[in-house]
Length: 477
Figure 1 (spheres, rainbow, N blue to C red):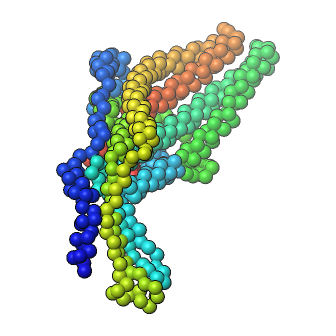
Figure 2: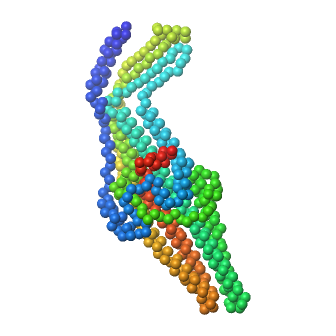
Figure 3: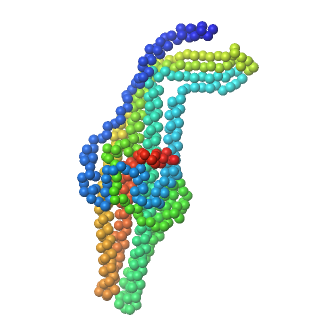
């Protein structure tokens, strides 16, 4: 009986089977364009390199060099508190955890796409069984779909890494800003002590009739102006501490005790390895993400082209069927079916053509987006290098200005005590010292923040280091 059914099956579906057999040599082919990695932009003028030839970059206290970048770049600041905050943020940040979940979803979706179509019928009183279907991937449509899904998963992984770099940079910037505010508060308190001494001296001289009440009023005004800066700076510090807490998934004021103690702005290292210019396109995750998106868009063209060709699907089912439940297990209740089906896109030419045009346009858009991402990356690196070099020169000039302004204040105070001049030069010198010291503190924090921006522009250094450290942070382990 089974042999007879087999012969009938072959005779009935002979032409479909012959078509399938004739198409077997095509099983290794896939229609549509194959993805090729984009060529790097020709930026010979940049790679002729301000890093190697320009004294602005090679003769500075903190020099950029072309050595390998560290995966955990924040350790270059040698600040244990910053290192602790960065490591905790990599594990606790809510945006990173959300991105990791999205990546898991993307990988699961790819697994769903790769799974064969199957249907298990629920058990009831009359029948149960199993259905399965397998599509002959003659034109590579399924392979192109999986290729697109793989590229989409890769794009999601790179988006996660890009967000990781942004969060790490934001933690460093906020920490540097907190230390800048604390340094500014220390400067204000130091100048406040000087202003109090000046007021006391002026009051003594006024009591002796040496100066008039106007100079006393000026000294008191100077003191109160400096005092007014204290609560403003304390408020700014509290806001930044809370911002760091938000990045670490902590409630308000949770980091207050840990960060209240004042520390200096993290100093920049004497040497800053930035890697090779040719490595930029492989180091920045946003570039790799754009490349993966271009890969997916290219594979989608192959799917659209394959839809113009027939689909051949082999379907089968096996199970039991009976009119009465007690007979469901009898041998006579068995049933099975096996047969191919073919889908011909005869009346869908307009839709398929429009879909193909859409996929081709999307691929062109992805190619332009990739080009723009690479070009933007080069601009960001160049701007960051320039800012880092210029701020170092500014910082050095401000350091000299601080020393000069302090000397001027000491001279003005000596002349005032000796009765050679009135209090006005002292007031002017105090204002100058306060402003210049604040500018110098701001420059130190700007310099550290510029280094953070440079590391971020270079891709954050998130390359494999041989220790698995970078991968551990990316995967959230």
